[in-house]
Length: 309
Ligand code: ING
Ligand code: ZN
Figure 1 (spheres, rainbow, N blue to C red):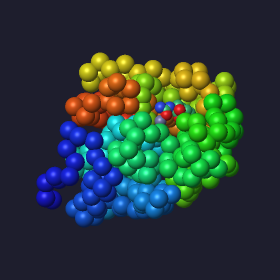
Figure 2 (figure 1 turned 45 degrees about the horizontal axis):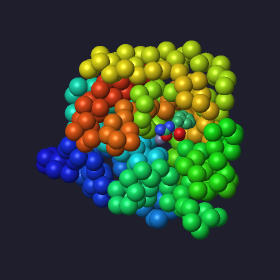
Figure 3 (figure 1 turned 60 degrees about the vertical axis):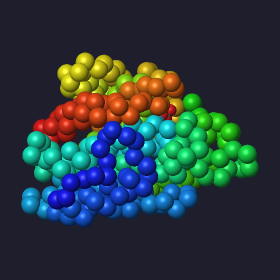
């Protein structure tokens, strides 16, 4: 394969660069990857997914799967960067971790909210939501992480389109949330769901809708701590593990709650990557590689856990 000159993890990628990298992956590694468009954003951008699916291995459609998304929130730029790093490692460096690429299937959506991301690059660095029109002509955007339908409109949400946590009018009003829902529903045997956000250094598991825990919370806590330890080993970065309500306060309608409560994915986590810069979301680009490397160690370890379980 020709060297990849499209992403280098020394700068944050634009939507166009992310698309170009996915095109490159799909051209250069057709035997390992499927790159698919799973839906379109409100402004018509494709929402794309990379499936790591080596043809050299006996193909079994019911392999255990790991579903990862990033960039639900526009300003959390480190999240898509880490997702691209994961894709690069799984596709271009797969000798280091053959078992988890061959015996598991990874489905990675590196940029769920391309409209918001583009807007945060061109116009408003602190933009969080998507860019859809609302009932208020002065305020646009829905918080995609409040648009899922487990306890839609509950604690930690807003029905005011001018707020950062605006739910949208109805559950799944937004094409980006529907794309993720429909893609998850189309897969069988998904064992682990990870949604990459920033910031705060947490492995969060359900429930986010309120102050109760899933019946199997001990299992989620255990895998969270496995990831936490693997991450800390790299360069000492400390994460906390717990339910999102217990660690951050309730926020209903999130994707992690839906994946566990409705899609039946046992292990579902929101990963809050490290912050930096002035506002926390503007982690300097010089940190992308170090954050990606330590996070990838944790996520690989989660892969091995899923494989052995
Ligand atoms: N934080 C999450 C948010 O959507 C969260 C917190 C986690 C809410 C899990 C619900 C479930 O507000 C960020 N950084 O977006
Ligand atoms: Zn977020």
